[in-house]
Length: 366
Image (tube, rainbow, N blue to C red; front, side, top):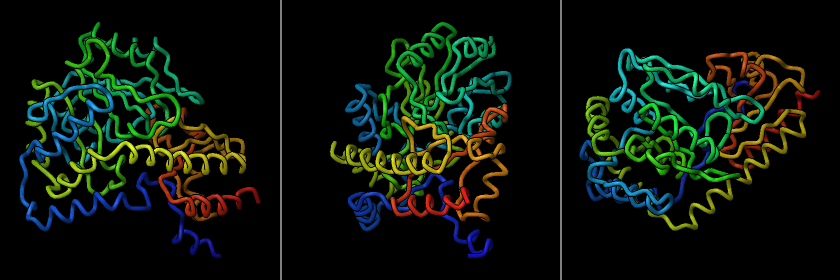
């Protein structure tokens, strides 16, 4: 196969989108909503039944009670929720603490709000942070700390001790917490804990999540926030002038999804564990230094054991040479040298696609 042919037929382990659809019962709920005419603007805060389903979900899994009328809001995905939150709560002169590597929209949205980002590095291979680094990052100008757990791209699941430390700092310095929890149902080791559930945090935390990751409909872009009423009023004011509302029939379908039986969530996790283990095992056998993720659907590998040093050069080489696409994570760092030896792979793919990618990557050893 020529290099050109390989490039046009690359196996995509880069983009964080499944190559399969979510459950039929959710698709059927969307079709039913379209057929019965739920196709116009919904309330800007979201379809009431979906807000109620999300409030029930938060209490069911985490014991957190939110009023669906005034504390739950629906957005065009978690990405819009992040943007609306930062625009609503931060402004010029404020600082927001981010853990690096970070989801790329964080820094852009901080800048759009006129605020300034300060960075705390999660150090490979364990991706722990130095508590003193976090404490030094907080200044009199700090407005909020944004934490993503389970964490993209590292797969880290923040521990109870780490979240308790974050909570203590937020209370001590009177800071807001913004938690991106879109991979909440993809935890393979440890457990997902909501920062909002810790002492002193319910009244100062914006919880952000997304139906796209949990139900494998990323293109539907249905995200949400759960936050105290005074904060929610600010979030809704920003959201009204960003998208106003979105995906009315899809919101109706996701109200059904969030009420799924426990068996759905158990099977979802089991299937992803199988995908994670298949990819991690294969990459390890090929000689990569695999940093096995505790959560999400991404794995980072150290490329130095294979003789490579630069993640960008490596990821540019892959499609042309072996027909596989991956992501260079140095783009998620302020200090790019921290991530230059790493590459991110997505296992939100069918097992046959993962196997095909591993077979192609075998050529690297030759």
